[in-house]
Image 1 (spheres, rainbow, N blue to C red):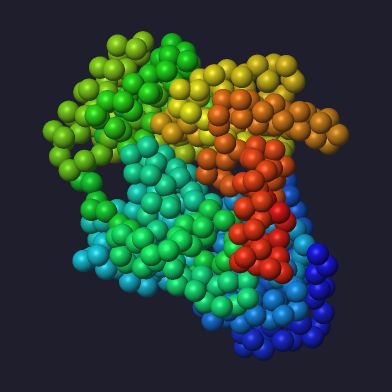
Image 2 (cartoon, one colour):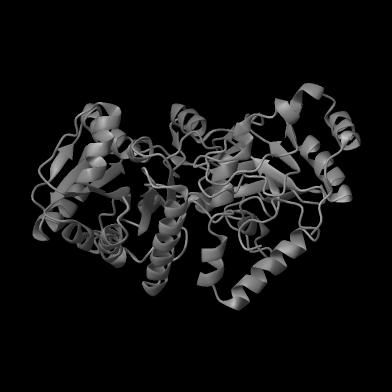
Length: 466
């Protein structure tokens, strides 16, 4: 499709729409950060950036863009990893990061209403101060809730509590045509027609712009204890996970870690990890309202681990010990990123009992292609985070090896009945792999849905399945 290039008249009209010239950025006033997301491999500058402060501004900008066929890319904190917030076709970036108000805490219905630019860490802090709990826990706490909704973010607590979609009761969105639509609400159940709300969740800003959300909350668990469980090898550790899940004592989180990732985190943080006796670990967390309740749960799981080859079970029942472990886990991505010149990522998800098979395959690829590959992930839900590192490779060799390795990984994932992305989304970077992994009929339906929402294809064009 041919999109209109923004001219002086468009700039003037958009400034008039929002009535504040300082919040409309053009040319040299546009920070280079707007051209890329966290990884930075995919880049393109917008022609215009508008820092919006309310839904009405977004609605009026979209009406204008729709009339003029100007592409629009919504953006929050820019912490994505697949280029979903990169303006591939230029046009306008709508920056929602200033729409960061917490609007209402409804303690009777256990809901929190927020604007889409509120940061995940601010939501967690606010609800915990009110003795409540928002379970989704992606690793990037500076992401906005709008970004989490657009990728259906998961995180480490997904094993017990589920993902973002499970905690969205209602949405306010702006359609590509500029119309404002309210979907869902505070009701617990809803069988009233197609669930348009759930179509928006995970659509990466291609169907509508999320402006407000009603989040489901839970009572805050009073106690939390972690177990650090060393195994002789990763295969033994991973093969224990289905047995843990099958038990009646479901942990809040089940993560797998390997020594090399731990060493990288130690160097990055300047802190010592509590244990170094093994090459592979499971890290488990349990929460509940009493120590007795948690102890009963972790005693059962500890026995399962020991019966299946665990070397030991180390209990982290103080804040200091838990911080030492989880800070290392939380630093893995930044530690890996700081150790190389450039990297790209894969966040495939496979059946839980195939995680060890996939990690072994990664090690084989590393040796075969002579390129560094680091991995860690959510053993409890089969979601792996794999990073391919450029180091000192030339641009040509880096691109060749990266494409070869990624092709192999996605083919292996498909062979194991896995999916392209567990929580980072498709964006621009993973479109080819999504297209090759889905049935033709599924892609046709996806494109029909896009057409139904956005017949001019102006909202975040070039992303997901387009």
